[in-house]
Length: 453
Ligand code: FCB
Image 1 (cartoon, helix red, strand yellow):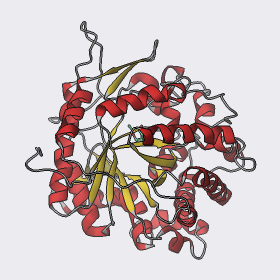
Image 2 (cartoon, helix red, strand yellow):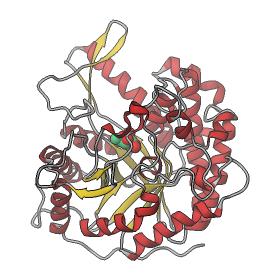
Image 3 (cartoon, protein in one colour):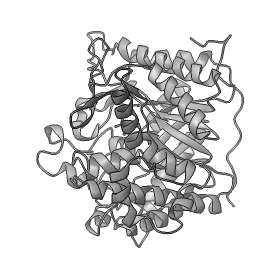
């Protein structure tokens, strides 16, 4: 394990990640419009226990205290997302200055504590008005995203140097539009494919807008990636693993880095073709400053009668999400992405684990499994860096226990426990481990925020 004698690069950023709908609450405040997640949560049977993002962690009001916690932790960087319906409540048209004011205050608070803001523009909370007008399967939503991006970057671009356009377009497209388990709850594969294309297209357009407003900014996109292992050496298992890799990883990596959709996914290429216009793939493949990688598990795949089958490795440890703990999957993934796509830089923008935490008689939360998870995955990142992966930072998911989408509040990913009835924050043992680990790393002063163009 790295320590003072064998350390990460001096400018490596240690961070924590969150997302607007999962922590903010205040869904009716300061002119915020309805999002697809508000509507989805209000639909009976969609979210466990009928939970919703109100009040979540009430970060909207408690952010000064939470930024103090981040300072105690020694964070270099904080990843948060901006709630689109706070900025453009009706999807298109008037900009809500009160919504921008909140992020303005948050960014100032972070910078005052010497914490670098990493802003994600879209972490799944589309304004409901845009969904009603066709949503991500419609190209018009990509155009609306660019208008929103323009408003946000004009306000915050003098202080925010790192922009992530989208979070996990695969999850939003497929789980939200084909599997129906996330908002907006659609169940059409064709909608998912179209949504994915428009998410990527809007990413490309947004990159141009961000660079035009703040030429010095670093711009990237965050993908959920998982290394796909064949269950055996049999050629059919290898082919099944490659197919899973294509559907989850290459369907996004190839257009972003090569300007093409992977040719081997024939059915999906047929589905996407009607939505691809001349020039789209050039737009999507505009060079990125960094790739954001979210990783939680690996895939182990065999050839089933009806297509690839995901195998559960019984002897492995699994988290409260049922996800296999397999740190070397992150190492292999970072190595492979570097070898095949040569990103200029990589940030691990999410990595972490849910376990069934309880507060002990001593009032504390002892979470040795989470500490071990984080520690072993940081070590995997370190191995990948040693083999040439240009990883520049690591963000633990998550700072706080929060609203875990369709699971509501039943899954705890935080390194800080949130006592939901009182909203009290209780740093878990993993928080103290991470604090001590960050403190053991040599640091260099970071560059000061860029000036607006
Ligand atoms: C990722 C999401 C994030 C969180 C974690 C556990 O897919 O980006 O919001 O829910 O999973």
